[in-house]
Image (cartoon, helix red, strand yellow):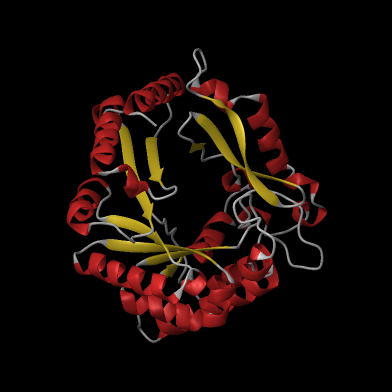
Length: 335
């Protein structure tokens, strides 16, 4: 996306904020892709500066920038000072075990260790896959701990249009039962390390569950974030053909005359939000006592003969474990 187009979008968002006058004017610009560093440091600095101009701090706006990068091929001489200057010294990176190859992981580990040595705080996002299951949750947490990772996020492996290759999803994606087993064992090991006085990366989903169960359905709904695509489409993941994800558009904000309010209040987005509130009419979701802390990004049918996509068993375990030993109180934000 050109910076000129991005400026047009920022001005439309600014107009909406000024119309609504919320108590807090916080905008989190979360950069991922693809590989966001591939756009180059000049582009990154350009859009940071442009957003500072369009959302003035003097008017109460707070703009925070986060980047999710593979780390491979990243020149830290270039990006380290930029992340320290614009991202509070924090960067996220993907860790998926040996799913891509052992050689990939070795290169990734060298780069992450170098970033941490340079004083950057690094968090990981992982899609739990068959390679991580083989590696095991204890070894996985130990690896991240020994590297100096500060915090971690763990997502179920979802079917989407990119990985819908015959045999690929079936080989790489664990069942939700296996995901719950992995996460519960990892959390129990995290507690064991805490009791021994050993620092270990925060497990973001455990903190998430403990915090969200205190709220209501509106505090745990897809729709509070929007993905902005390079052509101006504003989208969120949805599903079709069972539970295969795709990007559902709510409109194109670059179209002449289209406002940010038009996107937020579009028929497509309102139908999407209604589906979330009704939990897609899944009877097991509507009656679930942990629905407000569900890990599922958006409501969709569960797989037959498997546990729910919301990881209810892990969520319940985290909440109950924290009730007995409140080490998970206080939200952990992976940015």
